[in-house]
Amino acid sequence: MIHHCQNELMDIAKVTVTPIPDFGNNEKWLQYILTHCPHFDYVLSGNVRVQDIFKQTDKIVIPLKIRGAARSSTIRNQLALGNYSELEKSLPPAVIEHLKSINAFSRLKGIMQNELCTPKLAVDVVFFDKEGNLILIERKNEPLGKALPGGFVDYGEAPEIAASREAKEETSANVHIKELLGVRGKPDRDPRGHVVTLAYHGEYIDGELQAKDDAKSIIRIKPEDLDQIHFAFSDHKEIIEACLKKMLQAIEK
Image 1: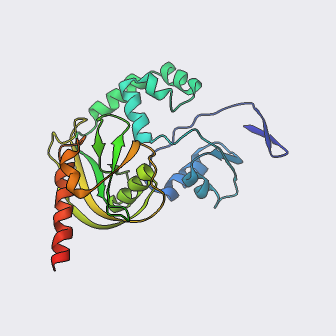
Image 2: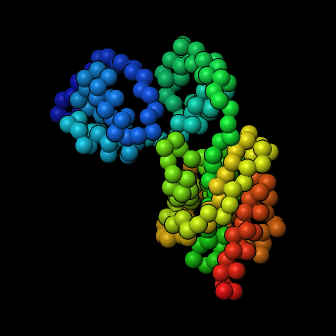
Image 3: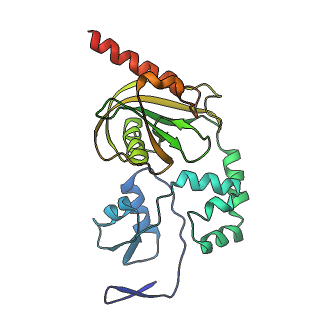
């Protein structure tokens, strides 16, 4: 229960933690919360999507400023690995202590080990700025090196939507996804595990290019300098070359 007075949060008398399944559907997710959770009047969230969902209800939405976005899949993997130092960058100390108290690390690791083992699905995007420079990122996390903007597809998300989202999250650019370049899925293409990627050709629309999310910096290179780049993933150069070939063929027609 949260006491509220003159639009200021005054006190937190009691906190109830209620597990919520991941439905992959906003409406089902909302209805589950409204039906199964104890009564509440306020929604405090720094997640814009969550704020929008609850604005259609009679709940009072209070936006929160957050230090930075943390993907649930990243937190889940860190939990399973018991990676305390990384979790401390994303979660409050009290949350980490609670997770330790319920033995969340070993429990989640056991769940993940028992899950059906299938490749993960990712997307990568080839696009160029207005001057014709190929846009790459310098990765902030392992595997280190330069790479195409991209990332994992969320459950319930169309791959082309994921491609546009990942390009935006990592480069701040609005990118229109034009076509599928191909599928790459060799088991050893990603040192983190078996990951199948859908490679897309995108068109840069607008937005100031700035590194965010998993990107440490933005790299602009001329296509002819491709051989000078050390890529974090073994097939990113091949993906880019395939895109350049298709672009040349389109010009020649």
